Image (cartoon, rainbow, N blue to C red; front, side):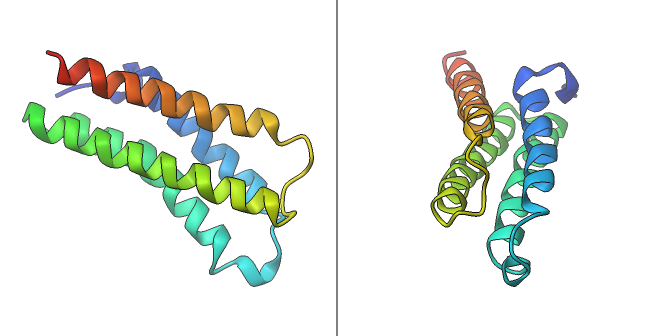
Length: 117
């Protein structure tokens, strides 16, 4: 069994989930079952799928769960962009945006490296 806490991708994904929960606290109440819920679910899906993939014995399943995590972080990136355009985020949200991009890059690189082995 692999240890997800040793992966930089997991560390970033965990930080991202915490960040999304904090920033969505101030979203409008009418978004509680809409964008707030969608962003939180996508954010939690990223580290959760990394952890679940690490628990799999099959290399193919491991990579598949990482791919699912990657899809979730890409969806989250769009949702974050939408929230910004709707005016739900502060103007200084670029540090949050860069955290999402960094997570995408690190997770994508991990997947590519595993596919080459």
